[in-house]
Length: 251
Image 1 (cartoon, rainbow, N blue to C red):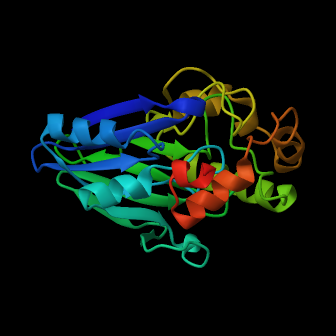
Image 2 (image 1 turned 120 degrees about the horizontal axis):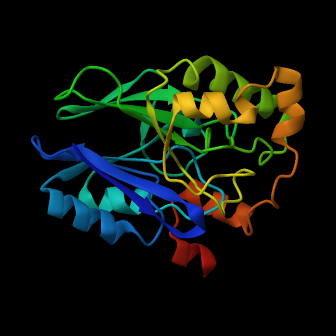
């Protein structure tokens, strides 16, 4: 397996991974302006990018996912709940769906809470074993923190969904499973994020206070001390829904 984590602007973390043996790669949460980096990484690894995935429609940064997919002829993927509100075609993902890239397989977990369309990606390398190796948690679970549920203005409803996504899906995964989040310290998508680039389910379950709280305490804690909502959030979100580039959106 080839694997790269890409720190981008606004404390965003993007990912490129795939199967060098079969020459297939996947890009996740590509930030606008980083498209050429992914193309160069794919060329260096000797793979073709077959899927470009956004773990949700972002509101804190402009996505480069659709532009990259069009540039390399890959499928651009979002959760199926985005079909009714986007203005471009994409490959809709459903909970439990499997994406194959040679010996690398990705299982989609629908984990609403930060947003309605949030997904996490459970990744296996079949050359090693059939057990999951790591999970890309998007903005659902960070290191030392969880995603903020208030961006849509429905904190109670989304907070309940976030609690269930964490407790019923992510925290039931194996303790040794590696976690790679969508943001690190400095992001406005949560409070108290660590600057470390990865962790494990077991470590976060044991030491992250948000993950051991009962539901009623979680509701209060998850919206306490949140940073201000991202600057230009409405403009960025609308541009990503319409598939417009950062340059076009700012014009």
